[in-house]
Image 1 (cartoon, one colour):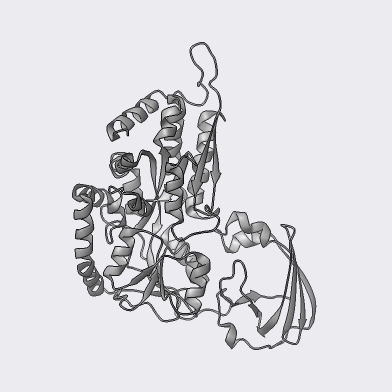
Image 2: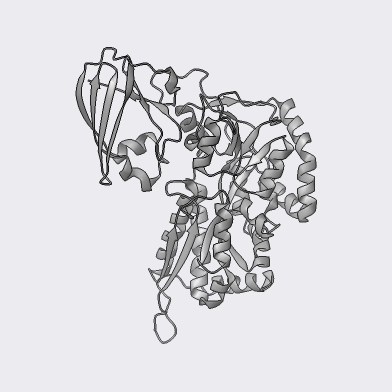
Length: 467
């Protein structure tokens, strides 16, 4: 097993030896052989974590002049077990992949303690604080140092987004943060689970399909998530987020197996390290920010609730024993102080609440049971329209790129007195047909769609219609 000092020295030497993409030959002018490395992640294309992977892959290609190729596998494993991030860490350790991008919260399962500060509540609460922590090379190195205990080397620490509590069962989220008697779905992570239990929650780990069933049967009431990802959650009625209470900030860890490090030449190691730094710079510059994420969340109908200063202080006091126990057990007191000092004070713009009532042209889920067949003033007949990928991305910039072909195409709608037959010839070669009901109110057509692969629950979709 390598010590952290040996690994750090090796990578520092590799960086010092870096000569750039245009000068990778030896003194005789011989070019080194090309290298292909595999990378695995549970992140789905179009989501912030996958964007980080794509930036890293592109930077490796550019810095190596195409000599080093990273082959990523996204959305792994395909059966989406609740502990999918741990599966990917174990796949890295087993030699099935060379690199991985995994959330910092997942490494505690493998015995890594140095990343624990990033999961503590009320420590890193804003995008600006997260950027400062990730950009501090010395601090990031210290946080990643624990990976050496399991024969893994951290190449980079990447901020993604702050995490909130979102209520999914139609009731407003409690501004006190009290979760007594409620079941909360959270990504698998020991520390996150301990914090949620400290607020009274019964914590469960569920994949998206099981979550849908759990929400519709009212077995799960709350989820821990980011605003950016909140639109993908199933909900009964209008979901609500506790806007100014941040559980923690999600960071992703880019890591490589030490067994792979041992067989790579120093120039390749330097390329990987430099590419990780370049990907970090772009991630900090380009990742979704809370104000933009909130605008999109409001657009799909989420409601916002705020805790008062007294309620926030009460939450801090309630969770302090939990945080103290985590810090003591992990032995990371000095690291917590460093993270706090580097993060500094939050300096984010003040976030505005989502409208209390939704405008008539807002796209948001509705209760299908309340929808009645009503044709309104829209003439019966056959209508055909085309949905381009740019139309989808204009309304949903974070729509998974891998799914665009499955939603773009030519649609034919046959309207008949409140009954609708909708057929689609989709760009990915599939055909789609649904017979349902609709109602009209002015320029808005509300269509009931049954659950399907991406629709977690039956929902009503609102269209703007012009004849």
